[in-house]
Image 1 (tube, rainbow, N blue to C red):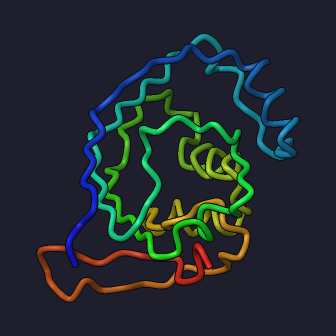
Image 2 (cartoon, rainbow, N blue to C red):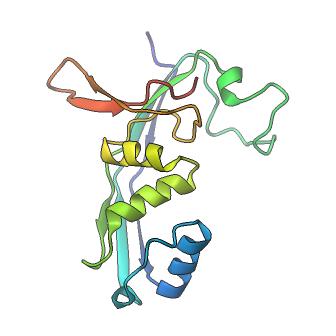
Length: 165
């Protein structure tokens, strides 16, 4: 199968200064009042470096550069219905995070995934198992499954076999 598009996204980086009161209010509003941020991180910097990524599209896929004139809605149905033969494979390396030692970055990363629309279970699966899920917000996605690429050069990973269905 020949790719219909190969895309490369450049690397990026940002630093934020933690405002514990605002961050805690955000967690509370998100229904995660069980997470209490330590006051010791107030005013501390959190730096994130995101490596470059690549994606390969096969089939008839939406153009990511095209403006969205539908505001996310279309009379033709969801993207999965509009582009049924579209398959996009993406390699997005794990970002590097520099943060105070008493900030649980792993737990916050999972919560960030939940903010995208994943359930807690999907976020755990995505975050814990390498993040290979072609449609992270898909409510039908219920499990992740270990897969082998069959070639040691490519390694192994996890996919969500029901994503996009």
